[in-house]
Image (cartoon, rainbow, N blue to C red; front, side):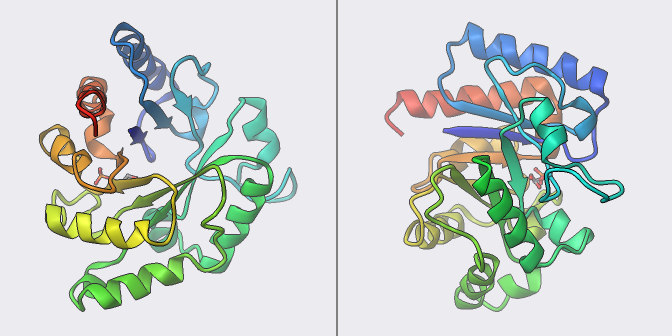
Amino acid sequence: MIVCANFKANKTRQETHAYMAVVESFVSANDISDTVIVFPPFTALGHEQRNILIGAQNGYPVRNGAFTGEIALEQLEEFGIGTILIGHSERRHVLGESQKFIAEKFRFFAEKGFAIVYCVGEPLEVREEGNDALMAYIEKQFEGIDLEYADLVIAYEPVWAIGTGLTPSLRDIELIHGALRAKTSAPLLYGGSVKVDNAREIMGLENVDGVLVGSAALSANDFCEMIAQAAELGASGR
Ligand code: 13P
């Protein structure tokens, strides 16, 4: 299983260090072999990577240059970052990133050998049109994306489920992940209102290889609990 925490624009550097200390000791004390990735804000990327991967929530697709307010390859490399989130719904819908730009980022960071967690997901109006419309929408989010890329993880995050407390039914998650599985052999994460109370049943579904958690992962103890659930599922043959 792959268990990820996306902090978004939450936590200071100091808070991130304290959080990481809790999760790192949990992972070593419990001999966790599942992959744990934390995506803190840029200011906290300098935390040394011990038994947890630290990834960037974003990156500009150049080595360096005149791109005010952006962080590029050189700055990520300085902190040993080799994992990046691309295509998150907030980058698409709040920050207005186009599929063309997202695909450019994907190509750049893939060429540099980054592990890429690539996010897809539909807004509510598309979901309401039914499964064919939903898959057609997601298909467009794969334009320019190499689904054969070796270090790829796909995260399915319905826009309407992010930060709302709403989730698709377990059957719907399984259905969509099944359709995604037909397209790629990359591990498939589910994200959108995952919390301690529902993580186990979601991770137990067919073709769900882990979770990408936002708000509920801001508590180190809750995140550790979800890591424990992933490990238990692994131990029971899932
Ligand atoms: P929430 O878990 O807060 O719904 O956020 C999900 C998400 O966007 C993770 O990337």
